[in-house]
Length: 101
Image 1 (tube, one colour):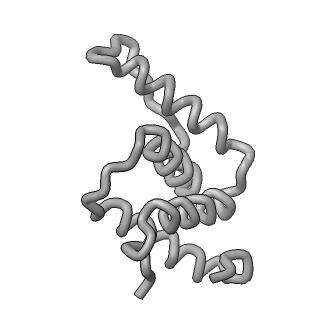
Image 2 (cartoon, one colour; image 1 turned 30 degrees about the vertical axis):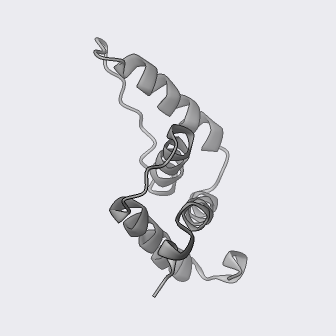
């Protein structure tokens, strides 16, 4: 499937499908992959406001740092590019489980 030839509406539908599949899978993803899923999704949905607490507990500070770094890495992408990257990552990580109906 050539993602570059899809309309915005088709990309949006496939992006939502990818998000649903990733959310529902029993597969365990490596931490770096989870961070990319997080950053692509947040950027694609224009929800890139990272909430950092003043008094982090139980490693929250480290998690926030990794999330902030992931968000920084995707900030130059358009929302459409982030959706496409999320879809590609979902296809790669889920394989046959991704199959859009």
